[in-house]
Image (cartoon, rainbow, N blue to C red; front, side, top):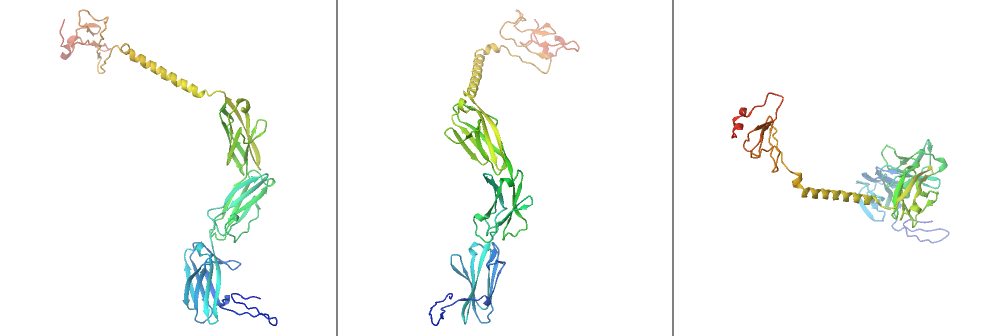
Length: 425
């Protein structure tokens, strides 16, 4: 036999055990009426409330005696905090925006003539996970594992997988602490799945108040690798081949093979790396005799195996840069020679100047210093021609009037005075 919160003296006398109480605090649920709202009672008697809610705590005593009632909060770290202390048979208070620091044991107590009495309620603060659940697939050997995660909620959510009118098991973690159980893993054998099959995961949480279903889906797909069909490298240099899987769920495994179907591994000759669904093969210090030929990128998951071929060839010399350099050099040399010739023979290229009047049929010819076949020895080196007839020189210039289809052009006498002001020979 035992006694709670008392100093027990066990004396065996005639088969009886005597118990002496010192400062006893008796818990009597019938003595109090406790209300915590809004809140829900779990099967074990614990009450949970939703995070960020305003929660009211009320406690009344059934005793009609004048009492000293109080609410005491005990933190999870055993720290005590008094909320209320009143004279009477009823006390209450409200906590606004409930948070994790308000999670713990709440005790309502009173003092009567028979001694102190109390009643304690454990209060948990729940909150749903953030965002929707997330689905992804992985594989090992011929098995596929489907992951459904819905994290950062308290307590753990529950999950239900389904596919093509078939339902799968659900984790039943209702009152656990946040941890790895925020994810449900559904293992499947390769014989039970096929390409294009769709799986759906529905998440449930006790604190989720929205009516919309929270779920995620994924489709299983066979792999489909892609790469350049031809890669050209240079002898003595590193050559890199790249292969990525355009499709494939679970994400496929990528491996490299030589033309004799021998798998290539990382070594002093090859460097292989894979990030996500992209794999690279680097051939170190390429050799035309040893490394030229056919390479295969193989993509594999439980839904299938696909391969893509890559032909690798090598150039013995790096000539592209040399050809470009020679071309540029020749162009610059030709431009320099042309500029030098133009500079040295400038007077030979430019021998005379021509000035044209665009507003009439009259144009002026200014001869250079060289002899002209049309120059009259008795003239001053300037000849005037009008309608193919010699004309008098005017102001040191020769006027030539071009005949047109219209009436005969005017003679010198018919020209305006300002044009006939010349000295006759």
